[in-house]
Length: 97
Length: 207
Image (cartoon, rainbow over all chains, first blue to last red; front, side):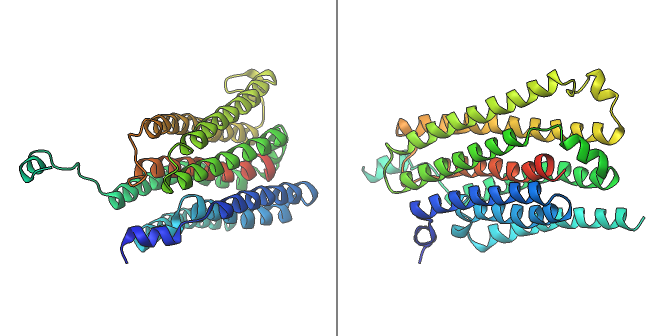
């Protein structure tokens, strides 16, 4: 099967796109509610869970990552991992000073 | 076309896979650009937790959430435009792209209202009130203006890119059997949306 046909099979349908958009709006509502009614650590936990989920939904469906090959996915994952490691190491540094 | 004519006028070279890969590599550089700001935010928030909380209370979360809804909707309109175009509905696609440009403009208007309000409150860079705040609050507003300003520049660039792509599609210069130009413009716009998805909680909700 050639790449073009593989992409066509993996393409997200219009109904799914609308569903993803509605989910993103709902998750934003949950995030706002969590930080309004449970500020502090629960709100931050909500941010750390919901924000990556929202970004992943946009990447997977809207940015067509589900249609891309392994090379693009690995490249993106590696770059994200580097940013997470940078932030993690820095927080460890501040945490144990 | 005769063999002789084909040799003298070869079809233009096209490599859709390389085109998308190049776009993704560019987007990764953008990720690191904003990643630097987010790393700085994490570092200074760890040092000035209370100050970030007080400064964050000065921001209007309603405007931030409204702009999130605008950008998420604009991502949907781009995605529907690309979807329609791939299925050969090349008259429908420019409508979606035009709507996206309008939503980008709406985002910038809301952002402008927000910045003007900050100016009126004396919290704009260079104003005496901001200069008199504790170091942590000054750092918060410095990061806020850097992140949202850089993001707004990307919104302008994305809107121009989508506007040009819309014109190319409407004139038939981009064909449904070669949608890479439109797809890449769309991916860029979604990155702008993704960056805002991170900015909203950091500055407007959890500070």
